[in-house]
Image 1 (spheres, one colour):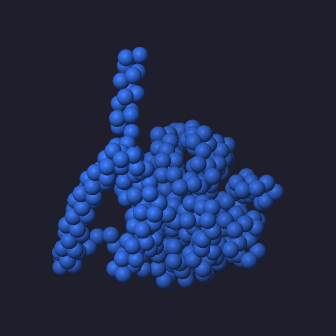
Image 2 (cartoon, one colour):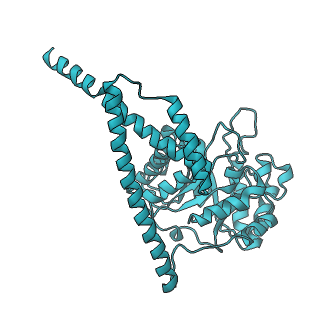
Image 3 (cartoon, helix red, strand yellow):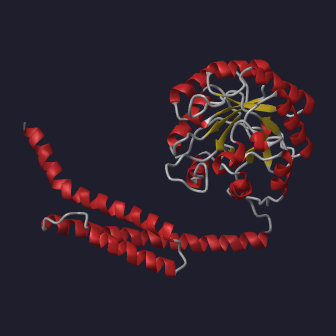
Length: 375
């Protein structure tokens, strides 16, 4: 499946001051002085291509700071005029879109809490119809690729061709080192089905901790994401929102300085040939793995028929526990991670149960259909 989006290259609507493309600024515009001073320090680094700031802040619970509101747009315009940086804000309603565009905001973004709601996204899309403005769409709060795709399609269908996705991680009930689980596979899936869609990573919201921003940024670049959006505040210790995940402009400059930039293509012929040889070996092994998996499933079908003929339950927990323990121990000895092995085995086991369930219910379903035909 390929996603059919009518989009322009990223370079058509934002000029990278340096590599990687960097969008930065405070989580929230708190005061005019705070925003403008931060903008000047960010511009001074020579790395920042656009200034971000939250004007309207949808919060999880009422009573928290929910943004300075429309007056913050005037502060952004002052920062833009004094630094020359284009500015970007989050919009969550059609009214937000109208006010931001009227003020002269250069780039809009749709937040995770909005992406999760198709009604909200459609309202924003309707307000954008007939307008030529770049729009970035963050992934939804929950790990749902279809919701992310749907939001991108709605904005694109409104005529927005300057379009990008922002990967900011996904909420998880389990507490981990990250504020939002990266779930890189979802972003990779989006990149696979929409190869021309720029994806920008938001390490601040993934990490929730300034100490992890460099690590997440490097991972994103290694996965060939087209840029970074990082929250930066003149004094994070007194920030009104998300203080722990913001960095000073000087710290941001240091983080970017230490990132390794790697190219997606190899120009050296000898290196390219070596990589091609290694990939050919992987292809051969993958073909063999799939062949062996098909053979395994044929045996699973035989087991399913045997269980049906002898009235044996599909799931036998003791057998599954035995497989899990033996295979994970063997895989560990072969330097495979336990997490990967367990996920792989669970996927195979799930398919085995599906096949056996299909065998168990085959005749029963046929009998029911026959009864309905003669009823």
